[in-house]
Amino acid sequence: MNRKVAVVTGTNSNLGLNIVFRLIETEDANVRLTIVVTSRTLPRVKEVIEQIKDFYKNKSKRVNDLEIDFDYLLVDFTNMVSVLNAYYDINKKYDAINYLFVNAAQGIFDGIDWIGAVKEVMTSPLDAVTNPTYKIQLVGVKSKDDMGLIFQANVFGPYYFITKILPQLTKGKAYIVWISSIMSDPKYLSLNDIELVKTNASYEGSKRLVDLLHLATYKDLKKLGINQYVVQPGIFTSQSFSKYLNFFTYFGMLLLFYFARWAGSPWHNIDGYKAANAPVYVTRLANPNFEKQDIKYGSATSRDGMPYIKTQEIDPTNMSDVFAYLQKKKLEWDEKLKDQITETRVPI
Ligand SMILES: NC(=O)C1=CN([C@@H]2O[C@H](COP(=O)(O)OP(=O)(O)OC[C@H]3O[C@@H](n4cnc5c(N)ncnc54)[C@H](OP(=O)(O)O)[C@@H]3O)[C@@H](O)[C@H]2O)C=CC1
Ligand SMILES: CC(C)=CCC[C@@H](C)[C@H]1CC[C@H]2C3=C(CC[C@]12C)[C@@]1(C)CCC(=O)[C@@H](C)[C@@H]1CC3
Image 1 (cartoon, rainbow, N blue to C red):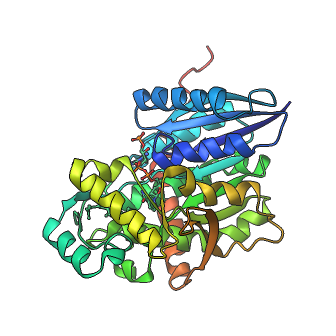
Image 2: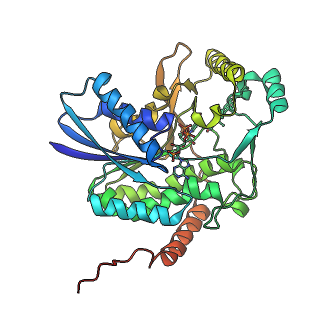
């Protein structure tokens, strides 16, 4: 039985879970697929493994020709020692990784400007739920590692992890899939604030960094046999923003999402399964020798609810400066962490 290993960061998110569901549905037959669940906490690992088991046994129709098993990785990308430990874990257990979905991300949202939200909905309902400006993001938040928190969580932490497990990704001729967003316009990133500590749009800025990091690295990764893509899942319901909503505003949001789809928005996928279309498409159905990698693959849904893939160009402006910054930061952390994990069992 051919063994494959899939690492999905932030597995216990709406998108992470549905990426795993779609991978189970589309993986080759006669494969033993090891799903490495990642989370910051063990309870969320256990919770998501039970959900995946239920899908596999009761919904997937793959019980007879696909074996799955599980592993887990506790990692917090805002903590570099945690990232190093995650690398150490992978390095001890696996010599090859076949899929890495860089799905985990966070925002430092501090609620919603409801007056602003009502104004935007009244003046431009489609824009209000496609390109919202009324979510409040804290400014200047740094991690304990003294980096911009969102820069580290969504970009540098995962990038550093990738550089450490490159041997496993190379051996597995892996697909690396970065999850970006439609809100990653160049306007969200300034070269004077690459760590996103001065901006009030650090989440959007981090997704711009993801786009540029992908453009800067996919060609060299290709030389190692690794196929990297950047995708965006459109817009879908998520635990991270549902916590700001009550019964009325949640259903008001859903109503606006369906209105947006009816009004012609391709991006209102609304459910996580539709949102997970593009992340799995690029790993399972795209032919890496023909499909372009310098574009962003988006999960889209038509007015009548049919899912499809819609691509977008990526503006490469500032790619080299951003990548140089990340490479320099990597060398800094290689030095800082070089004695962090040492063999303590010294033979007598
Ligand atoms: N929802 C939407 O409409 C859109 C979402 N996206 C992107 O899709 C992806 C998934 O989004 P969604 O399903 O809403 O996810 P959620 O925001 O609901 O969950 C985020 C996930 O990321 C993990 N995570 C957050 N911070 C960290 C950290 N510091 N270290 C490690 N893991 C972390 C969490 O894991 P745990 O808590 O288990 O540790 C959680 O599983 C994200 O990259 C998001 O930016 C893009 C466009 C639109
Ligand atoms: C207006 C009403 C009745 C409720 C507020 C709903 C908002 C919480 C919700 C509407 C559009 C959503 C949205 C995102 C977060 C939650 C909303 C603002 C994102 C910013 C999530 C992350 C992304 O990558 C963007 C593409 C999303 C854009 C839409």
